[in-house]
Length: 180
Image (cartoon, rainbow, N blue to C red; front, side):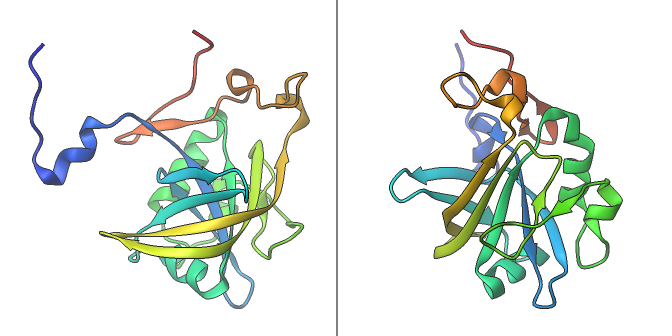
């Protein structure tokens, strides 16, 4: 098999698709915003830590930096249009909850709201930040986690096939198909 070599600006094309999350944050006046991210990763079990990568050019970057809080909301494939909208418009200029037809609900431990329609929500407080090239890596400690009961297995883990999380590459969206 012949392998293609990629220029440095296109190196990430050689990687697999990534999961997609919708991160909520708020401004200093309490106005919520949503940013869609493909740069999300759990990084520690104890304490529970996750990281998100956000470009400093994005409106949400400033909000997360100012408040030190965010919520990771995990959408199913049924939310792909709302998820795409939230990743292509700026919350500086519109109310993404209203435009995407999503419902904000109060969080338990942080100020940014949860997205009701997402099957999983992780409330996070920023504990570290790192400049990584053209993005900032925000490390968040998970303070509270929720998962819709209909997507739980008997041993209380996520039934990924039933939940249908979104994965993406180059704005093409898929979901998982089953166990192998």
